[in-house]
Image (tube, rainbow, N blue to C red; front, side, top):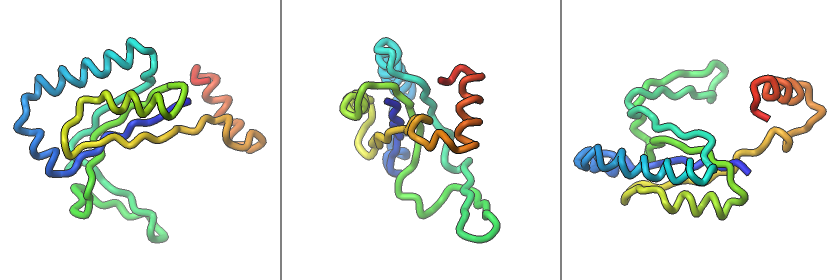
Length: 138
């Protein structure tokens, strides 16, 4: 089963982290990532650039509206993610609990549905299955 760990922090936690030793943060995350690699459960993981570089595409009107960040109404900042292949939600949660994050940060654990969970008789699902097979993703 695939799970996505979504790393989030409050703006205050992000601001406080700027006073921490960056080398220590990188080392702690590096050790965490190495443990995921050694266990063979990580499929992907990336950090995200500062929210001031983000844009939002809002589908609330007939034509999508693009707004530059940062977004003042944002209460939680999405900083990065990992995608893990594990046997259960409990295992994903156990890996999430080992992540070296501080106060004001948390991980949201979300299951990533497999292509096999969608209607297999749908034309576009069939095309995606073919595309995934061609690219070694099945």
